[in-house]
Length: 477
Image 1 (cartoon, rainbow, N blue to C red):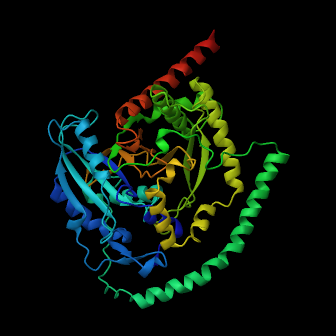
Image 2 (cartoon, rainbow, N blue to C red; image 1 turned 30 degrees about the horizontal axis):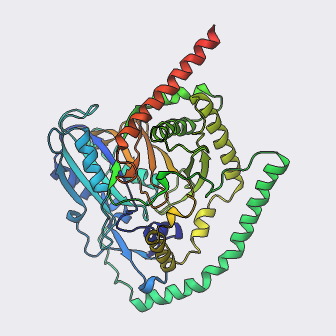
Image 3 (cartoon, rainbow, N blue to C red; image 1 turned 180 degrees about the vertical axis):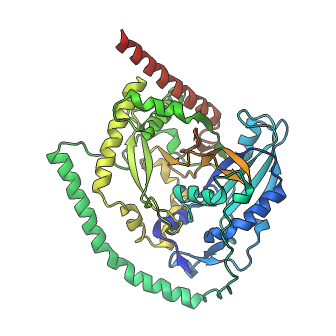
């Protein structure tokens, strides 16, 4: 058995029927692979990721976090499905299918993932007719964004030659251990209830050291303090979410986005991505006469996973809170402000304990947290409490060389993430082989016209490029 970490478990007690806590993606595959071949390929490689054949074992009365255990009744047919887009098989049909699938919960009675093989992609720009899509849903309790990329890398191969596909040997069949009794689980839970508070003194000491370092930066080095949670302005995106998800994506040339870094000295690709999203948010809220005077705040997850880590597949993240300068009309000045804000955030992030978010999550009681989450939703407290932040923007870099699934080229991939009461918009950003996709996820209640927001993402890129051209022309005169 492997116990969930506190951070992993948080995605379980946040989950309700209207707030699924899975992450997902849509991968576009070139060529006419059949569903039977796809399913056989998945079956051959499934053993490489142990988590895919594990399900959750819950502790009685919610006294402790659940455990990952081998599913004795694992059946691939309960995880791999096929469908086809209705005619004309275009982007709207794909968007509607994705929104529908991302709205539904994964069953906790079996391993928490699904792959949906989608045929009928006949009229989608940038995708050859006859291609297929792979829609994936994987619970956030088992995978963070970077672990999800590592998982997909295991399913893909850098060679189009099927004979060169890496074939890790399947492990010898091992007898599945009997499921622990409720008495055993309760004993473990009681032991954890006794031991867990002992971790608090060291965590408080670590936090105090981080606070002292932050004070040094602020008072001695005169570097402004970073944005704190629950200081974000209120918008309609901070309301209670509805069941029906709304998903869309914008596919961009990565070279275009990289070129914009030169506009502001020291700007990173992530700064440019944040500025693009900020420009789209500003225009979207302005059009609805809902733009607050204060800048919106983005929560930006920061992976704490080591570069060559092959550790457990759960969540290993911290977070920065970045003001998006949505109160600034000029796109270049907005990018400059965001670049400064992220620089400050990184300085303080380096001073803080990288795993502090994960460490504090270890102290949370699973059963009480689940009850608190349900009450928060039922009492509509999102309307009464300031939002912790306005939007989640997560940027996960992928490989910049072509990858293939059973010899079929991966054209591009688009992400999806969970939303919850108080934070009704998440924007996963994925880069792969010269493409960059920005894929907002919200709900029908808060952003029924999410395709309009995606249009504003594209126009935000154009706006930055035009401003860059004007700057260059001015410097040459």
